[in-house]
View 1 (spheres, rainbow, N blue to C red):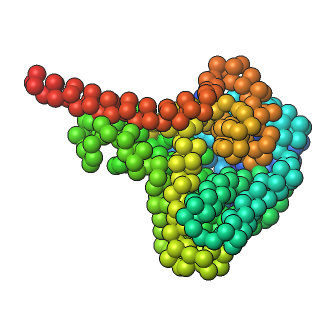
View 2: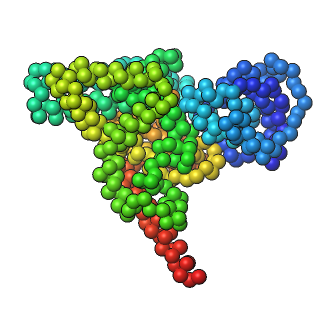
View 3: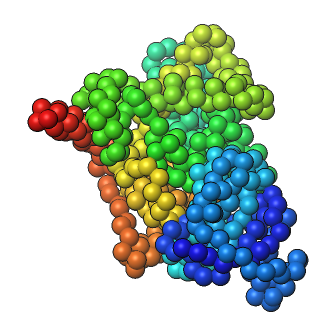
Amino acid sequence: MMMKFEEKPEGNGSLVEKSEPFLGKKHQADGKPVANGKAEVSERQEANGKYDMPRKSLKTYSWHEIQRHNQETDQWLVINRKVYDVTGWADRHPGGRRVLTHCAGEDTTPQLVEDFQELRRTLEAMNMFNANLGFFFLHLAQILILEVLAWAMVWHFGSGWLITIFISCLLTVSQAQSLFLQHDTGHLSIFKKSRWNHLMHKFVTCHLKGLSTHWWNYRHFQHHVKPNIYSKDPDIDTGPLFVLGDSLPIKYGKKKIKYIDYEKQHLYFYMIGLPLFMPVYINLKSMQVMYLWRYWEDIAWVSSFYMRYFITFGRFYGILGTMVLIYLVKFLESPWIAYVTQMSHIPMKMSGEENNDWLSTQVVATCNVEQSFFNDWFTGHLNFQIEHHLFPTMPRHNYHQVAPLVRSLFAKHGLQYVNKPMLKAFGDIVRDSEVLFLLILEKRNSDALEYRRE
């Protein structure tokens, strides 16, 4: 397929070309075209025929030629019929270079661009992207009150076992709710100024949670760009302990890869995955990134998390006892966070890169959990994963108002909108693990049968 483009000056994150015809069926979206760099041309300028640079002669490109620009040192994107050279800008992307590397050489425009952009304009007119600061203030107040209450209980009643267990539960709730709040700040969905969101993100993630913001951005933004895509979504990179999706188990079965007994991987999820998700996997990954990549600012902020615990509880438990308390809380928090973060993606489709449009990629990899006051609080509104993936900067307290409009858009275009009860969503995580083992076993048996026939 050949496409004509109107040439523009190249540069760091600049507009390279503008296409004439429709680009085909491979598209992606989150509303507005990317605002990039030095040679940005607005829609109004184009409509008026006004440009910063004079027009040049039309040039013809093939998709094959565009797709060649998919290396770390040479990255082009097609957005709204325009080609952008984002090579020099990739390192400044908030999610890191890999976010753009995953999409380089692709058309990242939505297939349903008109309806989707119309929906976004409607939501903007409804002020759905404006945060209620009172909501987030109460959320932060909840976290801080629980922390103060835990300290007051120890100070007044002592550090006996019953008190220690009780305050551990209080701190567990505080830590889980802190994770949801840092998710809001990481998506820049609270303040209108990015700088304030970034500062709040540092405070909540590093100081209240003891995790690295750089590590979180690096992982989470890749997840949003390519959810449930092998080698591009780090959230499903759980091998060799857990084998997820439809194609990976078949690969393991075909190659007879067996690091563990995968027949019991659903049991490993209960015995290892749930209790160790936060204290071991998440905590160690965060520390590894901070120290190997020398994020000194994050290290200083995270150090303040441990210093706060030592100052608050050190006089009652000592240094060793305080460390035990910290990791006891992480241990208790771990099943909560593991269930909430995995319930909307693990049971959904996982695959290698299929170069589908952005909207379809989000839909097939994401499902919702039914709304209720408890579900919203318990999940930090991550029960609205579909709305969150389509509008990641939207304040979460608006998801329930947006959901009916998104559901209507999906119905119009025949897209699947999955919404299930919370307990079923939790159970689907484990049921999915059992089904995957059957795929491995089936592939091994079929290969063995073919070998015997030969």
